[in-house]
Length: 309
Image 1 (tube, rainbow, N blue to C red):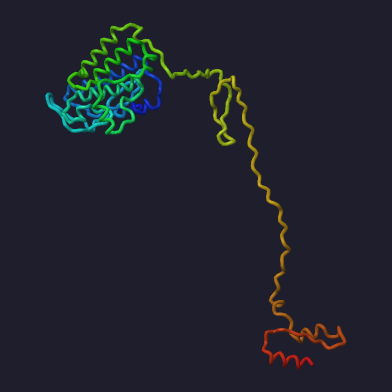
Image 2: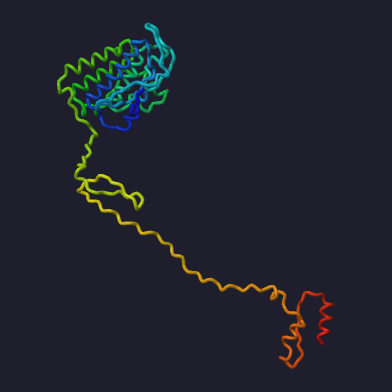
């Protein structure tokens, strides 16, 4: 089992630059070779799209491999399939018309993928199901944007456009087989000169390279204390950031209140009347008289007052 880098759909979304002529034709070859293998064994994929192509990196070159055979089917020669199935934006007109189809429906889907690889724009972008059917009803041949002529040579553009137009013939009988497409590409690659492969990539900016040997000590502050090494051009000296001051929260001193003496059991009880008399005896010439609210009944209090007199 192999592990691909990503799907072609994700790769195209992340990389906006055009492919070189060599890389572009390599992609087309990978697709048609896989289809030739399947069709020779009477198997049609029926769901070929950028989402079902995996990108692999081999010998400093990108390669494509077909995946997701969930709706593929075995179709003997001279037989036609009738099931309307697949990704709508790469489904051939005969699938929509329910006229019956064979392996040449995969050639149409491959043409849609190759159109997007060449122009970096999907052939039927942003169309819903009904709008797609109406577009296919009036479709004759693909319209290529003029931006490709600014990228690739005139000879290369002419060859790729002609190849894609053959794959996107509305009449399936006029489409070449996967084996025929593979032979066309092989002969073209062997016969053409350097002018054929000349190209000028758009939207491509080379990133400045950093000489690792000249990089000096550098830090990246990630938590204020620990630092990790990173490479930065020496022309931009990096100063170690100052250590952050620790945040100190000052709490004002709060004077504690003087402790309140808790009365003892004896203090809580209080003095009796006789004890109060002894305490104040001789301190005054007048008789000692004090009014005490004891919580007693009025009769008992009256009796006690009489005794004082």
